[in-house]
Every structure is written in C-alpha cells, then in structure tokens.
Amino acid sequence: MQIIPTYEGVTRTNTVVGGASLWVLSGKTEQEYKGAAAYLAFLATKAEQQFLLENSGYIPVTKSTYEALKAEGFYAKEPFINRDIAMKSLTWSEPTELTRGIRLGSFIQIRAEWTAEVEAALAGQKTMKEALDTAATRGNDLLARFARTYPGKSFP
Image 1 (spheres, rainbow, N blue to C red):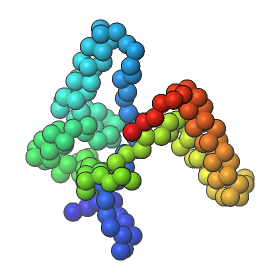
Image 2 (cartoon, rainbow, N blue to C red):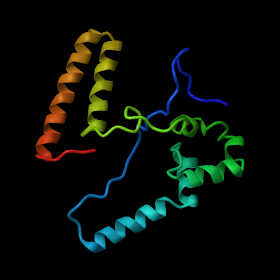
Image 3 (cartoon, one colour):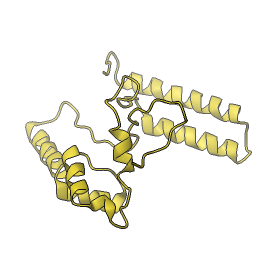
C-alpha cells in the first residue's frame, strides 16, 4: 500500500487536513439555513465530489464516495492513479487529540505569514531564526485579533 512516508520507528497515525473548509455560522434566517443545507447536500453528492476531485485534486468529502470511487477503479486509472494516497493517510487510524484537526483562528492567514517568512529565509533575505520569530509575532497578532472578534467564546 502506498502512503505518505514517515520516519523509521515512528508510529503512523492519521494525517491532518490542511485544506479548505466551509462554515455555516449562527444568526442567519431559516431561509438562509435551508439554502446552506441544500448547498452542502449538493456538495456531498458523489457526482459533485467526483467532479471536484477530477478538476481540483481535492479529496472526497464523504467516505461513501471514496469507497464508491475505489470500487469503480477510479484510483487505478490515469491520471488518477494513487491519488487516494491522501485518503489513506487521512484515515490511517482513528484521530487522536493531536491529529483530529486544527481549530485555529486565522489559520490560513497564519500559514501565509509563515510561508512568506520561510521563503524570505530560504532566499537569503534574513536568517531562519529572524523569519520564524517574525512569523510567530505576526501569527500571535492574528490570534489576538481573532480572540477580540469572538470575546468570551471557546471552541472545542
């Protein structure tokens, strides 16, 4: 079985999703919730998941679609051979406290700051320590802004 490699002697667990997400927030009308539910139901159809998979490289959002595509031989045909390595890695084991997913406010922006700083270090524009210190400062600023946006709230 092909899966994302790990270091020798490391116990493999599921990997963590780091891609896109959709959120349905509180405080909307019943009509808006019905629209959101219809859209999410549409995205969960096998046909739509397969279309997105074929055209974007994203993974199926339901295990049933993944299993159906696997049974149909989807991952055994060009250009999709072994594209299910991501699913195998995501579902390798039951999630642990550390691999169940990231609930981090401003995750996308924090990741962008980190990427920009590491690229600057790799380009010789600053030391890696300077880059990581700057990324940490900017990340902390983004987290503080997120906390101010949701005062008194805690997330599971």
